[in-house]
Length: 584
Ligand SMILES: *Cc1c(COP(=O)(O)O)cnc(C)c1O
Image 1 (cartoon, rainbow, N blue to C red):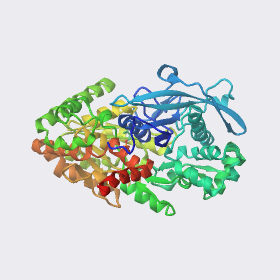
Image 2: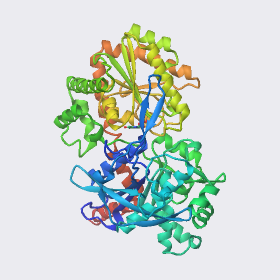
Image 3: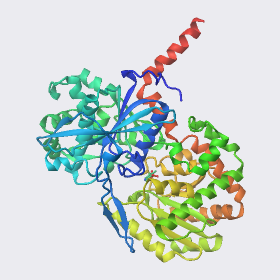
Image 4: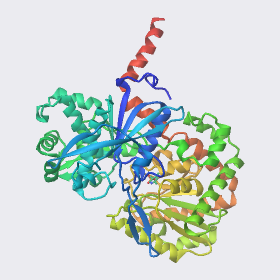
């Protein structure tokens, strides 16, 4: 990775602060809910690998997101995931204050150091308001990720953004770039403005002050539909943030359709904005035509999501792949039998894991489809069951199938919970000798790692254009698992028909889209899998070479460095290179 500065001599000009409401740091820390948190964690792991001078800020989430329980009828219930930050994190001394709803709230932090492959570490700071001097209401603010009502959420966002900047500064970490991973962190711009004004009231901010703050801010939006953007009423804004901040945000363009809109706050205060895939960039530009919005396609941390079996063969064939993910392109030269053997190993691990979790023994010799993600309705977990008869016939006539599902619905998402119930009901009804369907409880990191590597094809059926990027298919690709997916999000870029997977045809009508899935299974996937195993292995191999080498956070972060974080220093560095050449 070519960096525009030496990571060994970090200066203030090369420091980055990364803010995210959720970060998947380690499998045993329930500080994330899904794709956004995993992306943040993968980004930070790659930042450590690259030797970037970066610190990250999130909340400690003492009671986690939630553990999912499913009863025999597929009805979801939830329990807390309490964990002990004291046992995993290092306490930091500084305590900073923020004002919420007229109360003073003290905030401290815990540190976790992520070590990269070269030994470089970056620190993640977990903000914690569970301090004795705080009002009991405020002590609970860093308990639950995406829990509580709108008031709770706005207070958490103030804590993350305003508390986070103050805490970093109290630790002596002042950055050149503040990266907001989604709008949840948008209030960091307020703290940066307060810092810029050195204690003068916010209404005194000049255009130069605005420009100075903007110069520091980078914003990544992840939401392709207006309803998904984080919004609060003006009443909440004034009551919780106070008159000074609320009226500042109102005057500076943060209020849209009468609501405080965190996406607009972040857009207004950022010099660089991006969506998370090419298509999502386009969608975001049409949603916010008054702003310039780029696209940087997401990735996954290659080492984290490559199964041990594939790590071994990559180490043998591309010994520098951990340092340089681009060399995964040379997977094209790995003998097919080795790919097949590694996959068989990963498939066994998955099937053993399932037996352990559920008592159900699946057969590693049978074609296996995986579908696991948040049970948001737009992901359409039940699209595959649109015509259950046809699905059953397909398995009966073309070859047996196993289908593995997993995914949590947010506790307040009743339609999402209904999707889960529906899938489980159909799983019971349809399962027979040639078609077995299981739904695995409590989708999380380790289960995801087993699933993406252990199934034969990764199914993805979002409703367009709701999938901003999606990342689980990228994890599958690193393990030689092709995708069968609607052309949305990253798949528009990753799809080469019959080479990296297959596209489900786009139709207005859901049953026609489901029809395209059955067509593919009947005519292409099952015949290939059972009758042309060598051709199937070639597809596995090209999936790694083409998609594993690109859809990783090492490539992604390099794009952030060059385009978002330090575009000027890149320009300067190349100017410096050019001069002597001209002089010579
Ligand atoms: C990767 C991952 C996700 C995100 O998957 P999408 O394809 O983006 O929906 C969600 N949850 C877990 C546990 C993951 O590992």
